[in-house]
Length: 355
Ligand code: NAD
Image (cartoon, rainbow, N blue to C red; front, side):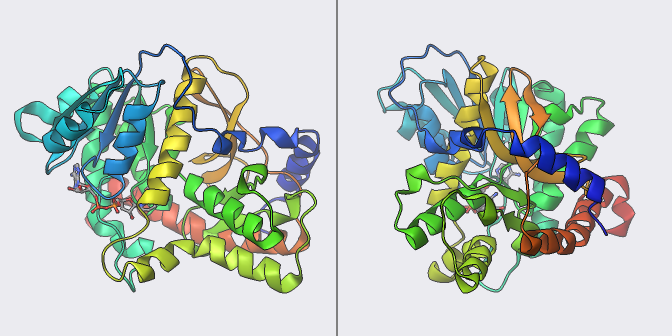
């Protein structure tokens, strides 16, 4: 038994008394029209990419952001010039690696969101991206450790199951690792699960919430459909919904036929996640959303589950609640896979001679 029954029992007890409304509630609100005064700096690393551009635009529109720094190895000043003509209070600028661009973008950042890297092509798994993206994330996190050691770092670059442990090891080497401030973005899995459940039940997606746990690749993604109130699924539907949530990214990769992976839905998900972090940083209470974080809920040292965010980032890693028999099985199957992907990320930094 890989997931200790003690842990599962503890999760079930605590989660059953945990109000459903709190679970990933934040996935429902985009607040372009709030009047909140904010003075928060957000840096997007990889801002000229398929995800980076729409993600940067959403942050430019957000009342939570006063300063937006767009960093990329290509075309960041152009993206920033374009965004700067949108009439919002948020000041925006862009920089490339030349002339200390990374340092300028990171200095004073409260939140750094990282979609830099290479996306999947048809036939590639997220793991195939490992070698390229591992090196990109390592370099960028070294910059964060030096220039903004107190910022919250939200990693989108895949494979998230490995890039988050890579980031943690780099931060540890610089003596600035704080597990509350390092998160892998799994919100797209939640967004997809909500959409697919709503379609299957004929519901409005805004009324649907789904907790998605585990990791962020294939079978390591585990949507907990048994916790969706009032939903009626046949066994076949449940299986199909689970597989579609786990491999939803492949649908997009295939449909884009070589032109990349999910960008627009990912930008939406990344923004939702990031804006909620900013709201929590300024003291808004009750911000709970799923994230891939350092965790002791299972034997995997990093695990996605609902997390309560506050003024310092992840204030509490919450239990994931009761599981059906099928979900318990799936959880046991995913843990060894997740542990091995975490180990690969850790080794990339700690034992680089193996790569
Ligand atoms: P893209 O190729 O369109 O954009 C990536 C951007 O990163 C490019 O502009 C590139 O110039 C930039 N970049 C590369 N190396 C860099 C470096 N060292 N410093 C700064 N910028 C650098 O790719 P995309 O479609 O935007 O995807 C980006 C990443 O996000 C990929 O790894 C992809 O797999 C991942 N992704 C994650 C999720 C998720 O749910 N977490 C979903 C979709 C895609």
